[in-house]
Amino acid sequence: MQESLETLREEILDRVAHCGSEPELDHLRVEYLGRKGRITLLLRGLREIPAEERPQAGEQLNRLRQLVEEQLEARLAELKAREKERILREERVDITLPGSRWERGQIHPLTLVMDEIIDVFLGMGFEIARGPDIEDDYHNFEALNMPKDHPARDMQDTFFVSQERVLRTHTSPVQIRVMESRKPPLQIIAPGAVYRHDDDATHSPMFHQVEGFMVDGHISFADLKGVLTHFIRRIFRAEIKVRFRPSFFPFTEPSAEIDIECMLCGGKGIPKDQQVCRVCRGSGWLEILGAGMIDPQVFRFVGYDPEKVSGFAFGMGVERIAMLKFGIEDIRLFFQNDIRFLRQFACL
Ligand code: DAH
Image (cartoon, rainbow, N blue to C red; front, side, top):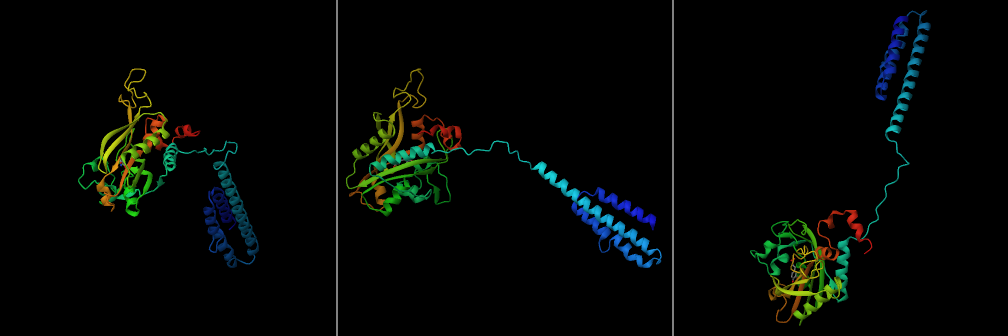
């Protein structure tokens, strides 16, 4: 008995000392001190040994039990301390490091230009209308005089959401939506995002347009010229030269494209260093707007009588105007959100 207790003691102390985790320690506790633990069973077995040996054996067993209990406790405390140390070491925070700062934001250059465009038109008595970005075929094409097989549909590089729905390729469908629900006189601008399957230095798959139109009893091409010339001279500068050039859009007749003199070469086409101007490619002019008198067919689609009303419409790309105003050569800069680019517009 003496010897086997000694061996048991050695064994237990050794196992406790090598125990590496709390669950392992619990396991040992059960193995030796649990209801069917080895020491527990030995204590229970005291009844069977001769009475004269019992007190001494009992005392030895109790001492062993107490020792095991103490060792388990001690090892547990050790493991806990070690774990705490590990956490402190691994999760240490260097409070002397400088904190991370929030960059101060400012208004995005496109928003600046958009707001400026809107302001000029509000000043002329225009009102703002909006339409959905996901548009149906009818409003985006059909009612703007682009029937199913019209070649102009190809020019729009459309993103289709389904057979009948598209991401609007221009803001012109807002014309239709407003005229469907209201009667003239109307003097509206419709700013917003538009989408085309196009992606390079001057085209972005999402960009912004401002559409505008005016409808009443006797609106003429002279009104169109007056409004747009005033707009251009407010957005660029008062003396800038403006040119109206015949063009074609399915929803206007007659149609025009409006150019301003090139701001890099001053309309000369060839700048001082004698190379062809890279902005206007030598023409001396930059196209900035499409416009025209609203086609009678469009009026019929919305239930207006083309004999009784007339109107003009126009559309422009906001990115293009911002690029010309600020001399930005790559449209993608607007959408990369590089703080070094954006910060340059802070003071505007
Ligand atoms: N919707 C045309 C486009 O996206 C722009 C445009 C041209 C709008 C002439 C008009 C217009 O209202 O009269 O390219």
